[in-house]
Length: 425
Image (cartoon, rainbow, N blue to C red; front, side, top):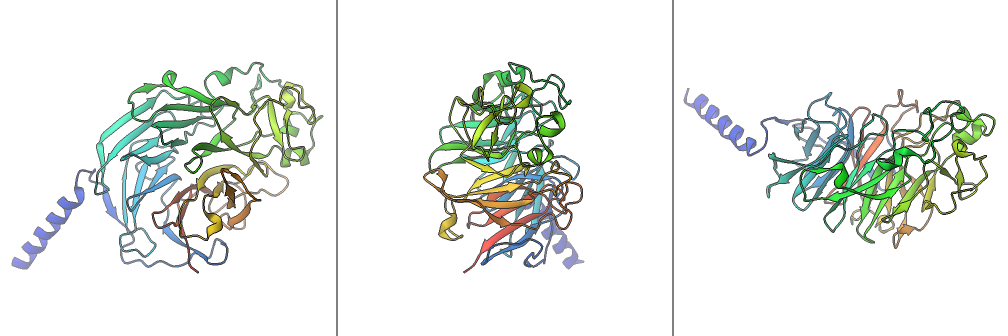
């Protein structure tokens, strides 16, 4: 009886300790598990991956801080909207899982002792305590009332080093037609969407209860950004654009199927305040290396009318790969060539049929002095398995995060798997 009471007392103490100042929904998973290399994805020589966590649900963007990996969940189907994971014994597998946040969404980041996270129409922040715990009672609304018309509605977020937060406001349209995605429908000129969407907005990171109107439109002419990162080496904002769809389906007399499959490029932008990247009037043709006039505005696939003044990408990737994650690598674990270069997670295409779908991989692009210094190379592949379609793929890469030891984390929003990628000579 005495031993039973001692055990009961110990369990009570452990329970009270674990609650700390966080919600009482801490769970421990994977206890006693051991890491094993995941051979389902391919990596360069010297790299290996372990399944850090699995079956989380719609795992979108991530951030690593103070020993914890925070994962933003796109929906609440599997529980709360933010999942915190920790590898307590250093074996490459998360044994501890704790979740909070009553909203889905995409964006998540950490800066200045606060965790920032976004739904599809708001941005929140939470105070982080010195021991790494999250003060959920401290939740503050930073921005509310963001445009959400259920097309390109995800809100990626990133902070600079001067107290600003940047939020993507995707255009709720393919190409600003009078009748969206209807064959032959012409574009609205001027495009009314650009008044409140189709760009990136800047807000104050430490000011609460800002409204949409309080923000500054930092750049415009963007269809949809999901991959977004701040490059502290050169102190600039970078983003990956999802290019437009359906050139031949909307204008079959002007474009062929082959052109629709390969156009337009998925663009990487280096963004400065006031930049205009041309959507919906223009798109980028990587063959001509030019912004060309969109067919909704009279373009024939060759004319650059009205587009010469628009900002060009600093790099062009194949069409319809759907870039969802962007991370500039600053760690020391990987070989030197990766330092300050960009990793991009491609979610994978749906609109290259009847030709094979593509993407579903993570690539690396070398950088020097804030600009690409070579061609991209495939870094991690095999996520989709044999069926490279949105419905048939086993996994679809979405978010990227860098651990304190220089490891790379990759999320999958199809089934919620998280990979930890490490390098060993």
